Structures are given as structure tokens and as C-alpha cells.
Amino acid sequence: MMVCEYKPGLEGIPAAESSISFVDGQKGILEYRGIRIEELASKSTFLETAYLLIWNELPTKEQIAEFEEEIRMHRRIKYRIRDMMKSFPESGHPMDALQASAAALGLFYSRRDLHNPIYIRDAVVRLLATIPTMVAAFQLMRKGNDPVRPHDELDYSGNFLYMLNEKMPDPLAARIFDVCLILHAEHTMNASTFSARVTASTLTDPYAVVASAVGTLGGPLHGGANEEVIQMLEEIGSVENVRPYIEDCIQRKAKIMGFGHRVYKVKDPRATILQDLAQQLFAKFGHDKYFDIAQEMERVVEEKLAHKGIYPNVDFYSGLVYRKMGIPTDLFTPIFAIARVAGWLAHWKEQLEENRIFRPTQVYNGRHAVSYTPIEQR
Ligand SMILES: CC(C)(COP(=O)(O)OP(=O)(O)OC[C@H]1O[C@@H](n2cnc3c(N)ncnc32)[C@H](O)[C@@H]1OP(=O)(O)O)[C@@H](O)C(=O)NCCC(=O)NCCS
Image 1 (tube, helix red, strand yellow):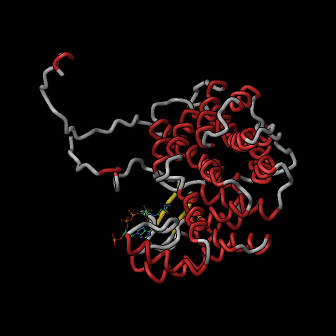
Image 2: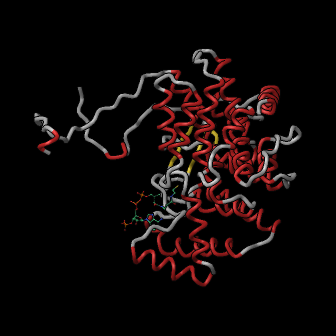
Image 3: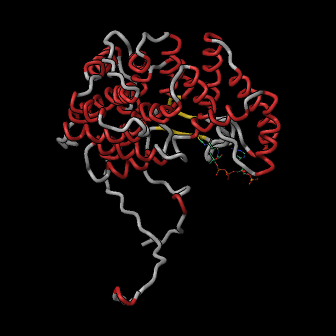
């Protein structure tokens, strides 16, 4: 057997062959199934993009109409799930609530006919349809309110904002939110996607696959950076404080949140799209100082750190957009999960097509031939 060098975090080691998405970090290119992210953000919808990711082709008019209708029909959550969520502590993190609820879905739909395309479609529809409802339901219930029933006249993103805010969404805000979901739907072999594929490889059910990926996304090194961007902008507090703040970070070798990326060495194409969306949102609903602080940060960081390939990443502007929509900061990562479930499901399906259970090896660095010490001698 070939012996490979151990790489912490498996950095640079391919974990799968995949045709779902592609990143060129030097040129700032992101493609889903070969289509550039800019094109999808300007022309597609989240559900159409999810369909493309999962079934590897853009749907026809009839196919997307049928898919949207199926999703619409399955948006409600079972009263047992709702009652289970009611018993969660209000102080619990919404990501933990989401992970538990996604796993609980498996109790209701546990049939594992993984080679049957009808089962696959059914699971895709149920997960895409109910995850936003679960996120919104937990948000309302932790405030002591009853969850709002999904609105049949509203599309995917409009309905989520309606269930969250208990009022009809502004159309521009709903479209911008939908584009945010497109931008977060998939991003090659990241930690949560890897987790989804490992879980999928055991041939467990797709609810367990998504629950495992949600658990992985919840960590601050993965999904949580946009929350930290907001805390940082609040801490900076004014445009005048930007330059001294950045100079201090550089001097202390501290990371500036929302900047830099392991793969992109130019500006993350999703950040460029989000910046434009943020501009539209702030133009309609009023400028606030945080947007001005963010713009100034981008200017100063570019001036000081562009030579190291440090530019804004997707998290820099997404937090600002969600904040402007009135979304609480601890829902940013659950919203990331709403989007990324499309990518996870695409990887689940792809993993099943050529499945081999993940069973890597390890480099043992422990002791050998140690004798057992009786407890009274320890
Ligand atoms: C995302 C991230 C982990 C990528 O890190 P990486 O690829 O391992 O890059 P490195 O940590 O090796 O950094 C390379 C150089 O750029 C600097 N750098 C990287 N990100 C930086 C940032 N956000 N602010 C300031 N300097 C940064 C490093 O200090 C290092 O400088 P050096 O060569 O003088 O030591 C890192 O950029 C980061 O922590 N960013 C902030 C958190 C964030 O926004 N995360 C969301 C990512 S989508």
C-alpha cells in the first residue's frame, strides 16, 4: 500500500471526485455545474440552482414548476416536530435546534431505499422545504410566540422572511435574500460537505447526512465568521476608527474578520456580488454607518494587505445584508445551512452513485506494550 505523508486537516488531499462545483482561487472563479456564479446570481433562483446542483441540469419550465409546487406542498412541519422544538431551551443556539430537528425528520421518513430515485427526490423535497420552516419556527418560539404557517402565495425566500418576521416581505429584500442563498449553496470540499459525504458513505438516511453537516457547519471556524464581522463593525463604531483598528490588527498579527480565504487569493466573487446587493438594500432602506465602515475597511485592507492576497470574503458583506433585513445575528449560520443543504444533498447523491465507505488511516503515535496498572497502584 502506498504510504502518504500526513497532512493536518487533509489540506490539499482530494477526498472525492466531484462534478458539482469548481473554484479557481487565483482567478476568482466559482462555477456550479460549470455555470459561473455571477450568471446564476443574476438570472436564477435558489430553487432552480438547487435543482441544477442536485440533478446536474437546469430544469425545464415544467420541471421547475413541478419542483416548486412539491416544495410548497411540503413546507409545513409535523406538529410533533413543532412540539419537540417547543421544549428546546430558548437560550439554546438555533444551530443546535436545527441539527436536532433535521435529525428528528429521520424518525418519520426512515425508509432507506437509497437506489430509488423517488425516495431521493422525496428526501430532497422534504429537507429543502422544511429546513427554513424549522429555522423560523425556533426563532418565533424562543420569543414565546407560535410559529407562523407557511404562506402558499409566496416563493421560497419570500416565505422564509414572512415566517421569520410575521409580515409580508419586501420584494427587493426577498430577491436579495434568494441571491444570498444561491451564493451560499455550494463551495466544493469544505468541512461540512466532507462531513456530509462521510456520513452518506455509510448508507445512512439523508436526514442523518444533513444533521451531521449542520453540526459541522455550526463551528466558528466554518459557518460563524459573518457573526464575528458584525461584532467587529460594532466594535469599530465609526469610519474614523477603521484605519487605526486595521493598523492595530496588522501590528498584532490578528486576523481581520471577513477577509482572506484559504482558496481565493483575489476578491471572492461572492463578496463582489454581495457588495452590490448590500448597496441596493441600503439605497432602498437607508444607509447606516456600518455600511460606510465596511466600505472604508475594504479600502484600507486592500491598501495594506492586497499584496498578501487578502480581500473580502463571502462573510464580509453577508452579515451586513442580513443585519439590514433585521435578522438576528445568531440566525446567520442557520441561514447558511438553509442554502448549503442544496450542496450537501448534491454531494449525498453523488456519493451514493460511486459509493465506497470512508475509511482513512492514521499515523499512530502512542505507546506500545504498556502493562495494566491495578487501580490501587496508580
Ligand atoms: C480564512 C483564513 C483562515 C485563511 O487563512 P489561510 O489561508 O490559512 O491564510 P494564512 O493564515 O496562512 O495567512 C497568510 C497571510 O495572510 C495574513 N492574513 C490572512 N488572513 C488575514 C486576515 N483576515 N487579516 C489579516 N491578515 C490576514 C496572515 O497573517 C498571513 O500573513 P503572514 O504571511 O505575514 O504570516 C484567514 O484568512 C482568516 O482567518 N480570515 C478571517 C476569518 C474569516 O473571515 N473566515 C471566513 C472564511 S470564508
